[in-house]
Length: 261
Image (cartoon, rainbow, N blue to C red; front, side):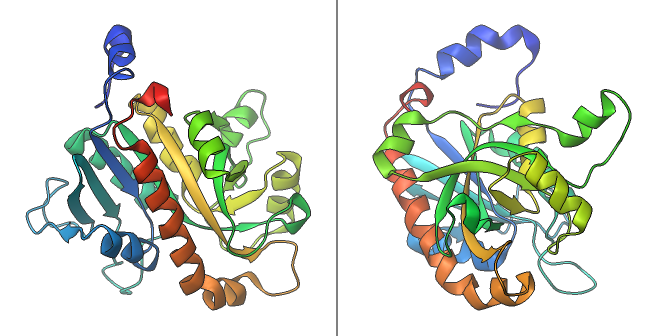
């Protein structure tokens, strides 16, 4: 399912009743993507349809008759580290939808979470909806635009089958959390915190493509360790848990329509 205009409602509805054939994963970090790439034997595309001369990395392959793509923003040209954050995530989401025409997007990655909300290190959450916590615009209506509340694609059957935890995701461009960020995250009743999700949701909504989110907990926001230290300590084991859940999701999706999810 590619981008749709307002006159394509019937087409969207008909596509919700045909088997899903193409899934695109949007993943910020190579370390988060690699276990999934390895699991499905995906190969990196040298002649990428996403654009020439860009750092974006595209993996592709088939699982049975389901085409799977994994798209990462790649390395920063100057610093050689993963291009995390909302801007690279928005760009690769837009380019992926245009070039790959997915039936559904899955933004998979790691996150921080509140233990008071029932989160533990290694938990993988299915996201119910997304907001931003660092777009503070205290003007009527612009304040709501800043929060940017958007629903993830509803997958009640998948949620029940895989018995996943579910929660709201809040997105911002910093790994740490200022007191203003914290107050907005709490005010918005978010369980999870990341650096990409709400940006991916914005682009998916613009182009009328359903999107779901799988987020694995590397650090506890209300824990007693610094976020960066806990993130790095748990990254390897948590990305393995993320791959396991993503594999279950792919196996569940196979042969089903969007309305079956």
